[in-house]
Image (cartoon, rainbow over all chains, first blue to last red):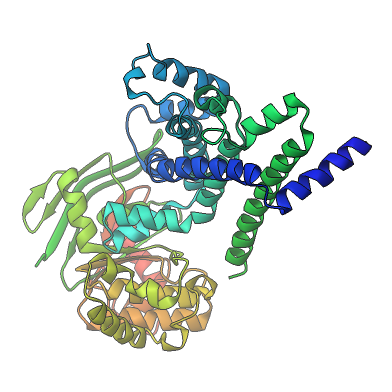
Length: 232
Length: 240
């Protein structure tokens, strides 16, 4: 127990002293995950909208597929991407393996089903009256869709936050396609795995604390936004 | 300028139940049509179909003498008819932006939007609510915002779905006044309602919807006796 306290104290020291090694890893983590979530969000929200409001063949299958993909482990996504990007793989010529781009692609693949499935639920629960009101007032399909999304924004925001929380904390895919290379592809979860194996608990705890603070911060933002909406 | 929209053989089925089976229904410019019927008779579905918001299983739509497939008729109907829900939806923004929605959708210049919105807010007696979030308004105020928001887009036809349901007397009266003003502006209106009496001054046609079938009935003249009863009596005489 004493060791845990000491390690936590050291971890706080590392964070507060601005240890460049730690903050570089944090920077890589946020850079990669923010890019991944930014790239997938518009596409995923549109797909979620089409699944919630559209009427086409294969719609139910796609919804089931998205929910199934939620359960796919990150390491399986990483393995698939590794095979595709490895030198002898079909995308080997792109030379993306062990780069931040590969990590971004992997995290995008993980985030897409989360955003789509959660946003689909939020949009499905929103009232069709929003769409009808927008359409009857002369809105184009795109404008009506954006109006529906605006009205359901807190549910959609929650979907994006949940996906971001998942990808910034995943280790399997980043480790497989990023390779945990110092100064390049070492992010928070891969660094925690490495430091723990080395017995460097302070650094692991410091990085773990960052993830915990992040999760707390995101949830506080979400609940504050919801509160403002409900009391408006 | 569209003058007449005719619907023939409109059929709407939910599961095994035939909700609507309307042989003929038409809306003409400058007229006010009243649709009455029990709850669940299909009034809302009929109004949504004529507004292009609900797809029927079967329907022949003729706009100004041109028969159109549903695929072509739907966008035309959406551009000609504005439908007002029984409980109008207020976008999560202030009254001004709610009223301006249709004009922004039409991509009018900001200065023109501003001028039209202020004129409309004044028309709907909403000046004092301009910056209030529309979600927190009372039922009557929301209906006034919805009528103002619809009127500003200058639709050819207005479909009002039970516009005074669950309102107190004062709000009902204010809503009637606005609807009467719309008629004075020669707006073509279709109203579904249980409450016939307040509309007797403006109604041109009256249909009774029963078990999905539409029965045209005489429009009674306003008199001091119980007019609602007179209308129902008239309907039964036609039905028998």
